[in-house]
Length: 149
Image (tube, rainbow, N blue to C red):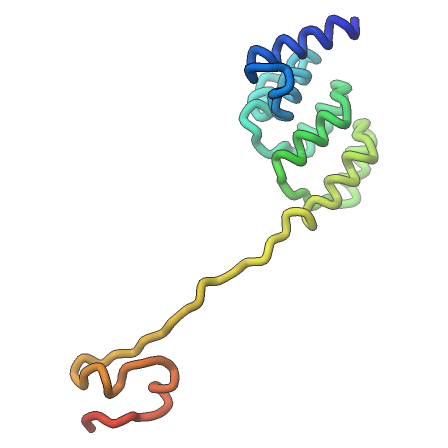
């Protein structure tokens, strides 16, 4: 049975990816989930590479999709998960492994990024007085540098 499963995975990888080594984590995960009876909506989510819900992750565990396959998909997807204690307990009860739960708990730290704002430049110009009198930046707001009164 295991030989047939490996053969089917190899054939689907060749069909989907062009060669057996080019199979992406999402196509491999989608194929395994489909073969194990996953709902069509979950298979489509996996094929598209979309973020999995916690219920989707639980379903993969129930279907006995290997942890390495699920983890490869989650790493590739890069989504962050913020779990409550109740959700962790629910996932454990559903059969989600400690490895996957640990990955999910660490995921917000992995995707945290520094937000950078472009340098902002303020220019104040008063057309009545021309460019040299009341134009410029903040320094010109607090002081007067010549011009008409």
